[in-house]
Length: 93
Image (cartoon, rainbow, N blue to C red; front, top):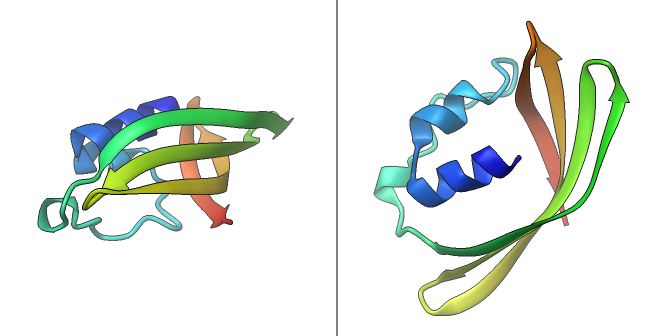
């Protein structure tokens, strides 16, 4: 989770797509076309490994966009395949 947060801050679309599970991965994220937010911090609220190959991470990421502060609160699901963890999807609240 922390590496994906850093990748968003560094606009590393290649890394984000490589760590996104193929079953839910979009073709592209379009980060280069968007106004970049200023990422202010990540708080991991909880993380839970539900079994050997599945995990849930709840986090809050704070950022500013066009001078306005925002928070992204998500419960993300991850799956491990061949020893690597992949982001599957998440519920934003």
